[in-house]
Image (cartoon, rainbow, N blue to C red; front, side):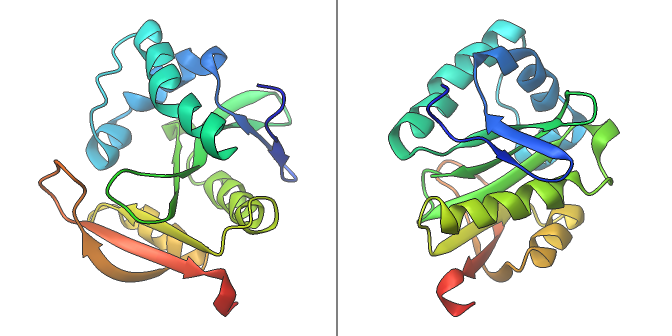
Length: 175
């Protein structure tokens, strides 16, 4: 794992998610906001989280060199959330996403981590466009995406899903 790049901000360290993060992923995936806005991933134990990381997160990291990052607060080495650049099935291009444990929300961590990953997307990974999707009722996520400079352009439906999602994008060629 050490060959993949870590990123940092003034307060945060972002490192590629690995199997050592299984307990955190288990906790995050079972928070009320995750279940409501992102959805059930059937991660009901630390071992199931480890299997999810192996099956869903590590392959993209190995293929593209980026993926899901565990967000750690530098001051006390506490894991506070997750932020990543994803190649999602059913969506064209790379998508940014974020989720934080409830006790670490509303502290600016999601903005700080996402802003750093947007910078890395362009400067380190050579991406020229970033997308994001969010549920219509997730106003906090929408506000954050707009603050990051992404613009709502349409609604989309992912394969196998029943609900439309709001689709945001930012083209770095236009910046």
